[in-house]
Image 1: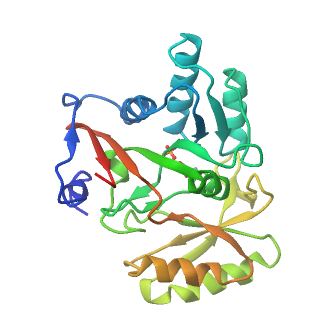
Image 2: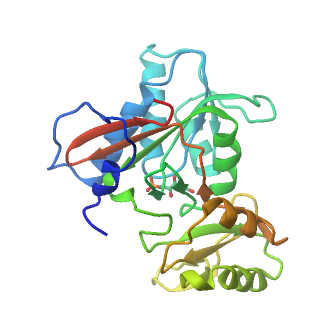
Length: 266
Ligand SMILES: O=C(CO)[C@H](O)[C@H](O)COP(=O)(O)O
């Protein structure tokens, strides 16, 4: 992979909007915060807002609460994508609801593990992919916030996991099927385990929905993502996968050259 910022050049034929000065001395967390704050500019009073999960999304949740406290935002209803985000939002006093009561979400803001040039995502390295996909899929607008390290040339291109949420029953059988499915891409499927205090692997990690996660490590590009998605979802033991295809409407990238905003629909 070339420079982490290279893929953005191929994101679209349209010019990207670069609207902040270079930020070469900032830490990765500061870049995440910049992207998150930019995304919160899309939040307007009265909106139902999907609240993402992870170290980038947490900055957006904190910013929304700050603007509520300052009276610059009013009547926001948050829909949290995980128990962790639920706890953060409760601690910050953000009014919350769920998809049963609010089936249409105006806007969701969330991080991602990978973003390809077509704005397809990998999500779920934090384990919240199912709720994220449900809530972000029900959103009129889905703003993805990342630092430039998340940009890849193709899904799986970072060499890190493409997560798949599976039912615990015979999870090794399902993992084997997934590995076989992507054999040509050099796939290794690994059941995600909790890491103990001594750094060793322990019991399987359990999602908010009581399921397990199988992480797929891909040596090569898997090609047709829609076909891959369909094939993964055909296994009865699979609940959902972490490829978010065609869902992001806006991408905000914070990097050493500033903040870039890319709208899928111009
Ligand atoms: O999908 C996710 C959690 O399931 C996160 O959005 C993703 O892992 C990015 O996290 P971070 O902002 O901490 O890098």
